[in-house]
Length: 84
Image 1 (cartoon, one colour):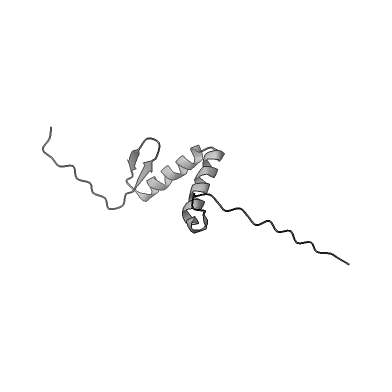
Image 2 (cartoon, helix red, strand yellow; image 1 turned 90 degrees about the horizontal axis):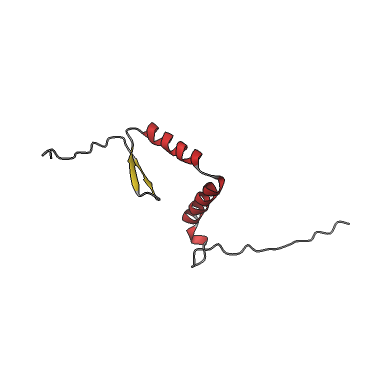
């Protein structure tokens, strides 16, 4: 085995964590990272996209969730307007 150290030069790179396989993907540029994101979204089914949207909604609006992580019921108010 080489005595060289593993050195990471990271001036403009990013990574993506794949939740299912627990892999980390490193990119050499931001363009490459954006292309990867677009490709990943294009491969998703509509149901997967909606699931991702729901996760994002719960993350950004967590102050409005119930203690168990569910959404509170919507108030159903019907206003009847009579025209004469």
